[in-house]
Image (cartoon, rainbow, N blue to C red; front, side, top):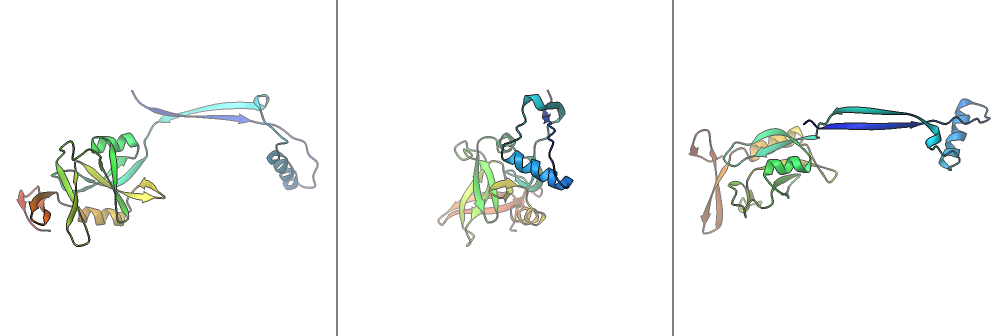
Amino acid sequence: MKKFEVTITETLKKKVEVEAETQEEAEQIVTDDWYKGEHILDADNFSEVVFDAKEYEPEKIKVVLLEPGKVARAAEIDASLKGMQNIVGGNIDVVSLDDVLIIHNREGKERNLPFNRGLCDEAGKVQDVISGTCFVCGVIEDNLGSLSDKQTEEYLKKFKYPERFYRTGDGITKVPYNPNKNKDYER
């Protein structure tokens, strides 16, 4: 089954006679009276109804998609909550990172999803590891939004290669690797 979005537009019309010097003055008088509630349009003023159907297209945003064991890639995704949950495979959680957000599976670690990318402090020390598929998106007025071209380039470079993680005496160490070459190497 396809999903459709139908817009219903009802039109109400009422003619009002007014005395004025000019057309602009007449419109201003009626406008002022309407705002004062002197001209109420109701069902008796019904003129027409129009139904306009179009195939539903969810809002899309441009992101950097990070999948465990795969090279980062730019993608366009469905920006609905359901669309984001489908990408990360469950309930979403948000990590703020500089000027962007990382959206990931809230239960990723509890569900033993594969490790994906490490998040480091300014000194380069791993502070957290994202488990499962996640994506980097922009922030527009407190809402999730598309990455700019500059941000896309920056985060494709920053998270380009998947990482392997090792416990050390100092915590966790991450080592990027190229899955296409099948050998570890430094960035």
